[in-house]
Amino acid sequence: MNTEKTLIRQTEFGGERPLFASHHLRLEQVTIHAGESALKECSDIDAVECQFEGKYPLWHVDGFTVTNCRFTEGARAALWYSRRLVMTDTLVEAPKMFRDMEQLELIDVKLPNAAETLWHCRGIRMAGVEADKADYIFMHCQDIEINNFTLNGNYSFQYAKNIVITNSTLNTKDAFWNTENVTVKDSTINGEYLGWHSRNLRLVNCHIEGTQPLCYAHNLTLENCTFGSDADLAFEYSELHADVKGHITSVKNPRTGRIEADSIGRIIIDQNIKAPADCKIHIRSNER
Image (cartoon, rainbow, N blue to C red):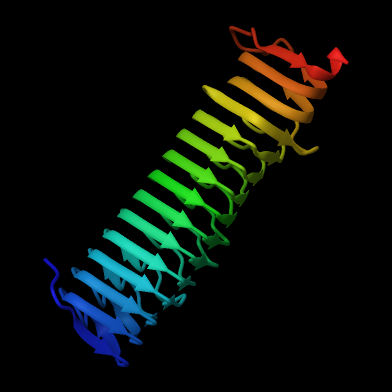
């Protein structure tokens, strides 16, 4: 049963809780000025061509769409403890967005100041999103599908699980630490210390750059991947099955599994290798 929405158009609000506990609203070209919690404890809200300037405007909201809007830097921590969001064509200048949320869909959204964004969220769908200054994005999130994502920011996806990423560029140091059940396809990952302590990380048709990638990993899989020249000292203490096209600068003390590559500059196996210490390394250039 659809409930008709009350239209609020071309007006301004400020101060504390001006629309607190409102339901079934459509906001068009509305500005929320400085203040707090403008739309707290609301449901069934549409915001179109609106600007949010005050803190915490959308907390504890159930069911809302945000279309062609802007969240200024002052609207920090704007969306927390909410569910069933669809956000499209929106500029989010505020940091610390999206905390403890469920069922988020972000399409063609720009987040130029995405520090500490998307924490403890569940059920995330993203396409055409750009995130900059995005340190610690996706901390403790789960059930994520991402396509055509550009990320610039370190320590991403830590402790996250159940993730599929395609056609993306991730410029991010310390990405995917302590993650579970992650698949990345047709993407570039550029950053040091990739995927340490991960479980069930699968990389398909990916290009990997940055020193000491994929160490301490459990059940790591690489399919048809390539490595940059700075991706050295790879796979230390990892359990893996890796098919790498082209050259790997160096491999160090892989714990178990199999590595196949066209060539490897250095294979370092020393007294510090961990049991079972039975990783098979196959260099295809030796067959020529």
